[in-house]
Amino acid sequence: MAGYLNETDFVMVEEGFSTRDLLEELTLGASQATTGKVAAFFVADLGAVVRKHFCFLKCLPRVQPFYAVKCNSSPGVLKVLAELGLGFSCANKAEMELVQRIGVPASKIIYTNPCKQIAQIKYAAKHGVQLLSFDNEMELAKVVKSYPSAKMVLCIATNDSHSLSRLSLTFGASLKSCRHLLQDAKKSHVDVVGVSFHIGSGCPDPQAYAQSIADARLVFEIGAELGHRMHILDLGGSFPGVEGAKVRFEEIASAINSALDLYFPEGCGVDILAKLGRYYVTSAFTLAVSVIAKKEVLLDQPGREEETGSTPKTFVYHMDEGVYGIFNSVLFDNTCPTPVLLKFELLMGTRMLLTLFVTPAALPLDDTGDSAFGLSAIYQGLQCDHIQGGVHSLAVETDIV
Ligand SMILES: Cc1ncc(COP(=O)(O)O)c(C=O)c1O
Image 1 (tube, protein in one colour):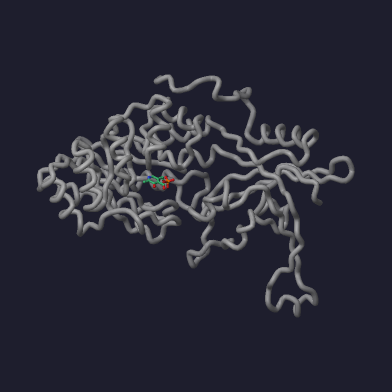
Image 2: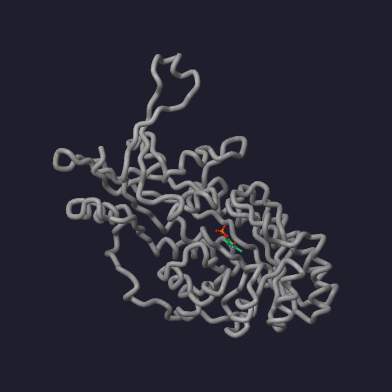
């Protein structure tokens, strides 16, 4: 083992303790002594991160995993992943510094942002981070000037039209422009050593990987024709982080393995890697928050009043965390946390204790591809219609009943 772990970084709990047991213990303890003073908190099961890693190695034996630091940069996660031998995909200087500070060597870091600040390109050069992504001429020109010995990975666009988070709207060169970019690099004496792509987070179609792997093969051929020695294929991320995702990880792995056998067969001299984010951490992290307000609201459903003689009502619960904080992935990545009711008790005759825990999951899509809940249902800090049903909301404890 590389020695990234430090016992003082973790609070270890006995074996046989589940996340649920731990949450129950923490929230009940807090409610007796410190009503209203408990901030939202996470419980992380780092064992789940380790289990994900072994599942990855089993299902995709030819692929070296890198971790996308931006997804969750908790020191515990980074150290466990470093100890397991992962490489790290960093989007900026701060992320490179973070992983280097825990002892990750520069050879295990890829600077994957296709649009980089010159000062940060220089930082990568100074600190030995050799692999950098690019997808346009201007980026190439910056690297030629500031770090000509860098090894470049050409990031290609994908068809991510069905993905929840469409990264190719912003990043990735079109196939048409690849020859030109590779020629430019050759002229400037910059080595292009590989191809990367990202099919967009939350992609429902495993064949999207197969298509992009086929596209990458074409780019490798153009590169070879122009004299680039390309030996890295980066499959990006989008592997689901939770059980019960629309497309199972095993299905995706099977589609990737078949495409690799076809386009990059074993022994072809190409190192295959992937940059995973949510796959490693989503199921490991559980969040507990407090309900801070409750409101009765009318359900605006045309025609219902005439049918039933009254306007249907519902309750909206507000929490001490929202989309400007921990739940920002609701806006940025179209995710929707799934709450589970943990406790529902009457304390001291008057106070209701509502405890749920929440695990993030992909937002379910309806048949039209729209989110089933809609953002309005989540805006004011996940709302809850029927707290006993354990849907849409979560809480640690509350005085509001
Ligand atoms: C370049 C890059 N690679 C990998 C990832 C990880 O994606 P995911 O969480 O879908 O695995 C991201 C996330 O935004 C990314 O931008």
